[in-house]
Every structure is written in C-alpha cells, then in structure tokens.
Image (cartoon, rainbow, N blue to C red; front, side):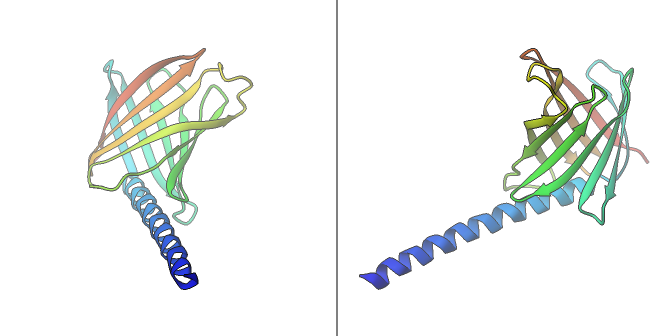
Amino acid sequence: MKTKSSLSVLLLLFSVFTHICAAESQAAAAFQKIKSLAGQWEGKDDDGKPAKTNFQVVVAGTAVLETLSMSGMEDMLTVYSVDGDGVALIHYCPTNNQPRMRALPGAGNLMRMELNFIFRDAGNMPVPTTGHQQKLDMRVEDENHITESWTWRQNGHDSVQTIHFTRSK
C-alpha cells in the first residue's frame, strides 16, 4: 500500500511540474512574440487620430520598452517582461502613476497572438478611484499589424481607446 501511495504522489508531482513548465514555455513564447515587434509602428485610433509606437528590446533581451505617442498627449512608456507563467508590464503614464498588469498567455497560434493584461496594482496611486490604465488588450494580427486597446478607469468608469498599428517600412 505504501508503494502505491508513493507512486501516486510522484505522479501528481510530475503532473504539476509538467503543467508549470508548459505554462512557463507559453509565457516565453508570448514574450518572444513581443520582442519580434521591435521597431517603429504608425497607426490611428478609432477617432482617426494619429499614433506612433516604438518597441525596443532592452536589458540583454529580458525586457521590451514601448514608447507610445498619441495625438494631444505626452509620451507613455510601457515595459514588458516574463513573469513566471505570464507576461507582466509596468505602464508609466503622464498622470504620474505606474499601473502594473499581467497576462497569462494561452496555448495556440502565436502568429495571431492576443494578450489580455489585467490590472494588479499601481505605484503612486493614492486611491483606487484615481484615473489610471486598467487593462491592455494587445493583439498581434501578423508581423506587420497590431492592435492595442487600452482601458482607462476613473471613478469606477471605464473608457476604451483602440489603436491599430502598421509596422513602418
């Protein structure tokens, strides 16, 4: 009976280890896709206003820095990195707060990847009703087209701004 019990425990541990490795592998693959976005991008938001973004691989390939320029706004910075079984970001906003978000990539076709970054917490945000970026849905449609939908939350109300980008030649 003791051997059977030990075997069950070993099988359970192997199963958990395999699941963790697969999740971390998916996170690494999703981060590689973000790294492949390196370069200049131009686009428009849903109101037709111009926007530009630039992705740069930094810190010996362990992070990606995005500089987002939108019409009528100061530049924003977002830093992406692998975080265990997910991809994390810190967004540096002109409102002087720093939302931290995380996405768990799913298995599937990484050619058309979608990451849904969900708010976890923020630096320099005195109360939860302070205006901040709450969510980012990033969709990589192909090697030359991406869409970012940013959700701004203030006083419990959300507004979404979607930008469609094309890689600059």
